[in-house]
Image (tube, rainbow, N blue to C red; front, side, top):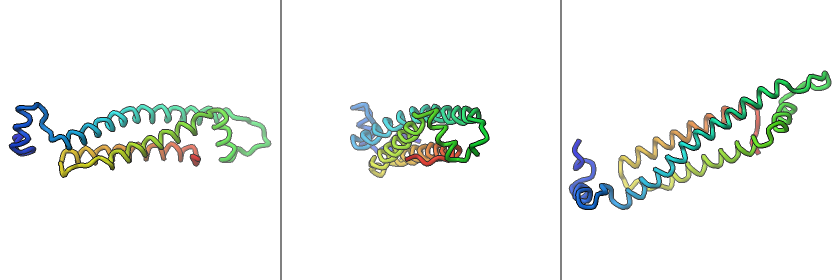
Length: 147
């Protein structure tokens, strides 16, 4: 489709003469979404790191005490995991908070009735939901409540 179909004659003239095809308000929204996009890329990496730590904690908990005095219920296992990995609870909490901030930033971006901005906001929101779901799955695998 022609550029004129998306942005109109005024947008086309701005692109030719100024070089930026977006009106300033939409450019600001796109720039904010670009920043969120970078945050989502690093969030993906951070989730991978947390998942590795969770898997490692689960594997290390298998080698826990073998005395017959403890029945290793969920609370004992949770204590053992956090004694061996004290940073895990903090990492999970910080990551969850970071996802909440990214979601709030996406919600605060004004779309100005622009379809591309709306599409990107929806795509990024779906990505955050996916990351939150994965984090919840990891937490559930440890049977933990993050305080």
